[in-house]
Amino acid sequence: MQNDKASGVFNLRIRNVTLADDAEFQCQVGPYHYHKPIRAHARLIVIAPPSSVEIVGHMPNDKIEIRENTPLTLECVVRNSRPAAQIEWYRGRVPLKIG
Image 1 (cartoon, helix red, strand yellow):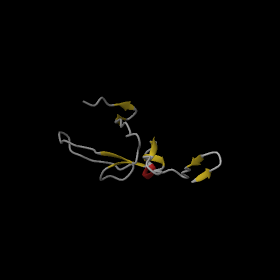
Image 2: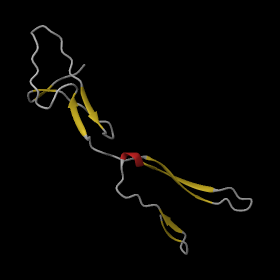
Image 3: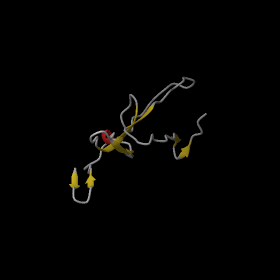
Image 4: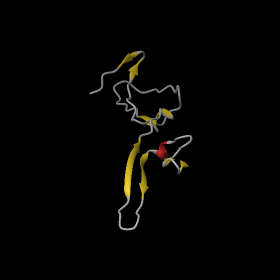
């Protein structure tokens, strides 16, 4: 915290913001004698790119072999993205329509 009591300015500085800092913050004055405390609120929303993306159970660039007419499910997991990542699947360079 940094402050200048003479001017009534009090600053909260967060260095190296992380996803754990995503929260509501509040500054408060008082209570004083019979007066209730006065508060001001601010919501900190931390935006972060994904830390990783993987196809579950497979190493990057794995070759997956499967017999014809056999069903296959591939699960893609994106970690620590905020807001949530929008995932798209491609066959080669062509986007697949899901749904």
